[in-house]
Length: 313
Image 1 (cartoon, one colour):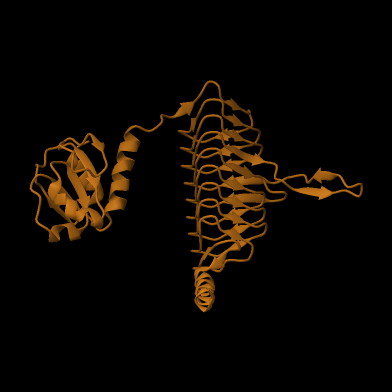
Image 2 (cartoon, one colour):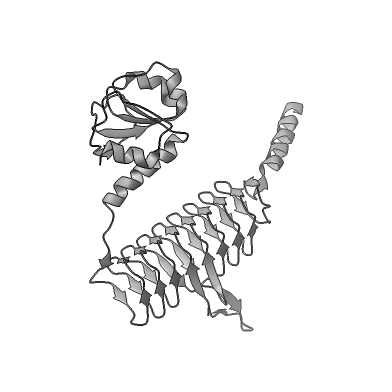
């Protein structure tokens, strides 16, 4: 695409043309002093600014801090407040140019009662059961299964090999000592602009709905149990396990391999650290880590105490 088209999207604070305006940008690449092509675009954090003088060619997205050093006249500068975010937008432009086309694969199995919105993409061997609703422009990858009554909003992206709407792991012990599964009569509701990776399971609620809020992003290999509610803009990262009936607030971050106990409570804007085991409510605007999960303030106190005990020994 033309450089001027990228500039119109990014709206840089400042532009310095070293190698010229009339460039057809062929692809985004990583920052490299070995690059000798004018037709590629890349970005750098402030830590890479000392390396800019070594660049031979290309289009650089950078912060205004890069202008404090000598200007490299071999490259074009696009100066923006957040270079990484700007580069993400560039990646999006190229992704859109090469995105999966609309349509339904011949091998997909879709129940006659299911309702599909406009311009959807349904991959190979996808199964969509009765009374499912798929919003406009949704994309569902190969081998994914949407079980009965699942609702998917608009502009949702679901990867490959996912199971959404399955029965949760809910059992009761009978008088004889045997376990019997609890019937799950609810469903899964996925709101607009949600993105789900690959090999993830989201279980239906026993009664009511498992709810994935607007713009939530769910990574690969995540397990979300029955009756969970996840607030909008939250991110659930790879290998996380969210126990049944947990409520996660808005704008939360649940890091890789974290586990949240059944009926857990995580407040808005909270962060759950990598591998954390959450057994107690997490208040809003806090960060917890460890097993069992504690706030960073509590962990610091524990570490200080242990350090003093070591010194006494």
